[in-house]
Image 1 (cartoon, rainbow, N blue to C red):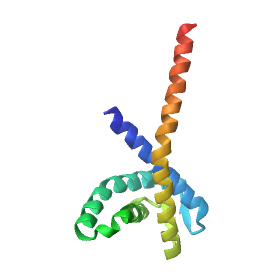
Image 2 (cartoon, one colour):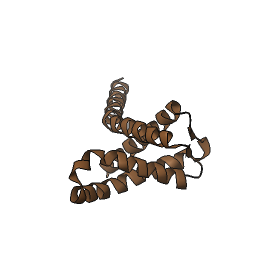
Image 3 (cartoon, rainbow, N blue to C red):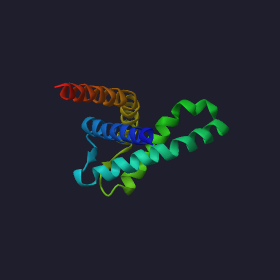
Image 4 (cartoon, rainbow, N blue to C red):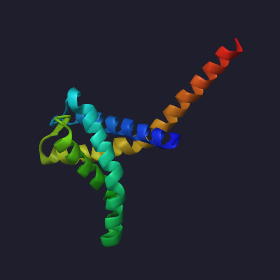
Length: 136
């Protein structure tokens, strides 16, 4: 159960970072504070749910495209977050959609590798502090 909570937290943090970085880089992508959390949750849930289905479909029909599954699921998740996210994010123009997809995919992928490291590091430091406080 703890693993699921940690994985979910890592994915939500990575999704939020991906959306924020894309927004900072792209002029025609905007994040609105009021709907940002909902957009992040929709994006992360869509990614988690859609990725296995897209992998299965691509594996069965077009194996050469397996490397692009992350990009496709990121695009679909962005689309859903844009449509259902209660004005959490806005993306305008085809170049911005392409850029948002690539940037969000890349930052989310790197985030899912690095965020657990930083969470573990923070947990270790906290455990050391607690041990030092207990020893006093």
